[in-house]
View 1: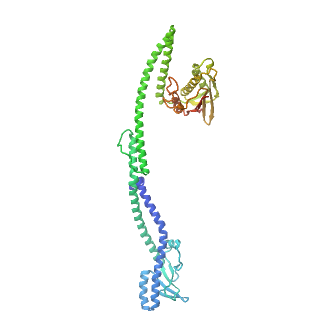
View 2: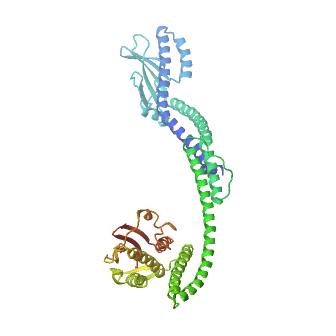
Amino acid sequence: MMRGLVSKRLSGKLLLLTIGFVMAAELVIFIPSATTFRHDWLRERAEQAGLLTQALIDVPNYEASEALNNQFMKYTDVTMLAAKRDGRSEFLLGTPPEGAVMSVVDLRDERRLPRFRDAFGAFFGKMDGDIRVISASPVEGVDFIELIIPQQRLQMEMWDYFRRIAYLSLVIAVFTGLLIYLSMAALIIRPIEKLAKDLSAFRADPGIQRGNKAPSPRKDEIGQLQREFYDMKQDVRSSFKQRERLAALGLAMAKVNHDLRNVLTSASLVSDRLASDTDERIAKMGGRLTRAIDRGVKLTRDVLNFSSSGGETAELTTLRLSSLLGEVAGDTLGNFGVGPRKIAFTNKVATEITVEADPDFTYRIFQNLFRNAAQAMAGIRDDDALRLLTVKSDIVDQQIFISVIDTGTGISKKIQDTLFTAFSSGSGPGSTGLGLTISKELARAQGGDLLLKSSDEKGTIFELSLNLAV
């Protein structure tokens, strides 16, 4: 259980990684260290043997030599000592082993770094056999001295050295890991844990103010993260409050518009009767009243459609696009222009093209685009000016891009910036600025989109993308 807790927590992982890295570093350092230890261990015994050689040669006393023999071999593990002079070997202590396997170490070969292979051999070599060590002699007239040391003894010393270094490395690793752990826990882990707790609480209920403490004055990344989270909470809470107010206002507006539409419907009946009165003055006033009421009804209808469009779900079906465009043009463009101001319509969409779309959604999109285009072209004062609405299409992969092109006066740069923002792009009397906003939402609900491609004094191009029928 403790192991699982350590492995899951960031602080526990940090502690384990620190210990592991320190141990790895100690292992890298241990390899040359063990090589140096082996070299120094052999050199130390060679130096002791050199001192003994000097004593034995200067005072050749067999009794003393026999006594020294036991003491020397006990403390140095040397089983034989010989001196080489005048081309002959003189045995000073012990006797050479018979038939033993020997490895030769010549300490006269000064190396900056002893060979690593020899150290590995001392660790993992055979336990039997001996080491023949050759060293320079401190005695004049003696070329060099030789001593025999059992391989087993060196191997035991090497493993003992390894255990000491391993225990020391483990203590250093744990101590270093704890220091780093405590430092990182104070600097990083605890602030992150507190931040995660605050984030979880904020996600559970963003509206509740659980203290409004200022963020930490830290200048590092943790301080920046705390400040960003603090600012995000303030912004989200402000947005929630604004949305609540807008939702309440929208509900109130929907209720008012619903009741107002009923009132305007009744008033429309009265205005129609006044407009059909035989008295020309009364009929004229009735006509003006009727137009004003119609604009009010349109305004309330657009607001209600906008408030309810977010909950609509597209019912996709296979739809012949060219036929729908003709139907929308017949229902919409007939009310705009007469005589030289009549609007011409050109449908360049192939009759065989079918799309996966909602018929009602698509109809409403094109009806809004056609009506806006007709209004823009109706505002042209020149009777001889071209008033043409063209629809054409391009197919890319499995999508069709339908361009609605008019020859109107264009959309001002100021309105283009907020063209698809509700209540922001109204460009004429009685316009709410909701038509294009609703149309874009309806297009996206079908897996497409509605974009303004271009608009200038020569006309405007809108592009609607829809999915082709499979």
